Length: 312
Length: 312
Image 1 (spheres, each protein chain N blue to C red):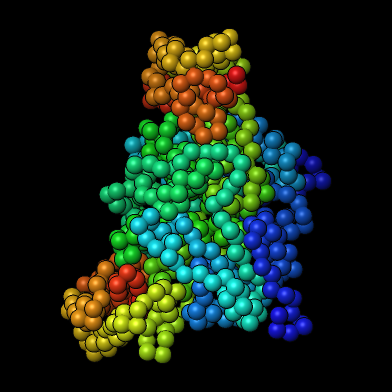
Image 2: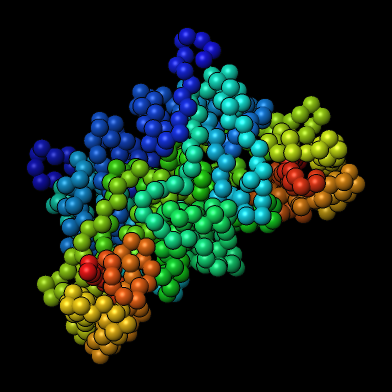
């Protein structure tokens, strides 16, 4: 608590309590903003919080590592966390409530069966094969989820869209702020909100970077010093591509080849480097309309993503 | 309008207006109930409305034939409608508002691309290939949607769950009433509401039947007099099966064979006749716990469904 004028930051673990908290504020006509996070907060997250504070009287930050968006082969177990540190940072920013549920998929009661099936993909949630009532409802944003990260992480956006819908229905915010570093995620959430008629403004906040250009990510701490240095090749190559495009290079093939080359030379392994339409994320061959250049690359065991908007 | 004490029934076509109408009522602490329908209302629907009236101060009935749940090969074009008649019936029941949007998938503005893709199934919505911004967000209740009607109508419950979520987000009701005649639909909606954290009570209302036992359905008017007579075999065979089960016949195989035989002899073509757990809709081989015997059968070009709960 920073000043006596402010109520202590609420730390809420229960869904029902979270909804009541939000409703009681909105009832008075105040607006509630939600910033969904997976915790281990860095300056990128805190910028989202600052943005949210400008848009609503009350700001809720959710901290929840969502098993539904990790494949069993991915890094759910090693995903970094520091709830105590997160709460301290959020309190310093005078956030009104932190929603940190222990398990968003625990429905108790009825002992259901596993939702495993052949034809649909599986996340860590289903892989756990828990005895309780199993979650089986998934939201698919069919076209937008296909490209970019969707190719190598086929169940990722299914999990993201679903947990965000859950958070929306628990917190019932007026506005929610997402980082444009996760560009595809931001577009998918916007589309989901439109298609399912959620009455929530979805804000995309600009990418926040370290002084040397590396996009902020909770996964950055997992990089060795060498990998940390190598990873700079992503932002550097993207910046160069943007300059080239602004100087008249509109053919994507060459721009992509340069980015792949620079990252590979630095020691990274490119997952994808694609130039897509900003709105519908379709791959373009020439830069004639606003595009975003999206990259995912591995440095050791860490997969990083970054992007840069190019407005010709 | 039946009496001067009541406001005239609102007939609302616009999403925003519907949400405002509902919010202004709920703000006072009153409860709003939603009865989603596809129109061409019969006594089955009206029983849902009566149920809703007992549960909330305000009742909204939606009338919308959802293209997202019909496959291109199905009967979207011939689905019966009579909005004027529906409005008259609802006004007589003193319903507070009727929501009859012209198009729940019209987002205007941005000219998107078709959501057609190879790997996912297609509904009439995508088949229309409309030029506008195309809906691409779909809710899947993966396990419950698989069996029964899901086998012969693979995109049906995807469309139902999605449009119901849309209606929930537009009307924002406290309670919604569904008919147990569409048993699988009712279970799917309940599961979706739990899994996505909608704060809405989902009520299942009992099947309403004609005097001779035929379950009420908007499609019944499409039956010829002969088919209408043949169709009685569904409810009759289900009743017999229930009596047999209550008399100690717990093996499902024989019960199913009898139902198939009676319907087939009457001139129907059975799509499925399955005995499943009431809660998770898994097929059972013996009736040891509460089950529901679900049947779908064709009479001419009309596909009818019915079911009967059996509690041993």
